[in-house]
Length: 428
Image 1: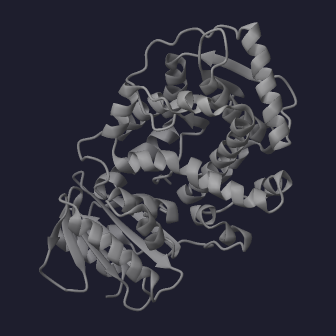
Image 2: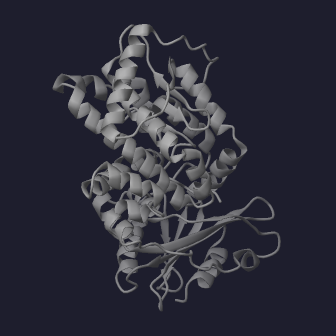
């Protein structure tokens, strides 16, 4: 089912550092054959990446150096996939209920713009085509860095079959997030080694240069979406580096046969090593019946530790505090619901490793963030053990289960509906 995941849609894609989208797609230009001089340079880069990763592609890669319009065309194709569209529609509902994107926004349009500007290279595991944004007679430093990253994706696909791995992770957003972090983290790790071996200090200026138009669009993008776009690269890098330190590339090869199951394992590699992960999400009540006639379940999914941490951070919690507040994650599950005349609602239950402390730590960060956010207004009437706010997505009710320490959250059109859902989720 759909859910917010820290991912790009079905590809290994390289975002330009701190850049974002530039506008709508235009008529795609025909890709010119790679010039002979550049062809030789790209072959050299690919050979160097193969040596670093200790894997081989087993043939000549299908490479094109293209303009932004070709990148936009490829991304538009992916975003037009019915499964991707359904996932985006569900995530839009969730993010609006939580107040993480504006109520009048179009998540598909936001993501299209963000990706078209941010992505400067991609590897399509369905076709085997590797695209890098570039031009001119020589390979630039930025093109070289992007190509090293995307070539790492090609090696992943040839040796571990990315299409099969994505299919296996489908319908579990947290598992998909963990897979995306493994894919992007390893490619970023390889790119970093390549850069250390091949780039001079002065090359960094070219690598970090950002188009002012792209920067302006990034700054206008909701914080949560920016955070989730970058998460697989940064957290994934830390995970891969930790695994590599335990035995080099051979240990990384073994990890591809025993992939992390959750974003928690990405954030805490020691939990991956000890095989700690929840076998099943918590059991949720029949919330459609609680809301009444005409209500139905739209989707069911899992947030996971990464999304919970980034959610808190997007609400204004300091990154380190948000990470600690989410670090006791044990499992979670949520339902999105549709009403008879277009209403929407949700119920979320988060279980913790240590019921005595983890829920309280999350509660302090979460309640403090909402109380400090001008978009949310605390409702002070009613049971003091339940926190309630009016927010952009409706009335929000939150409480910890008195017996288990689990955190329950409900969002509904009315205070009575939100309270009824919360009562079913937790025993106050």
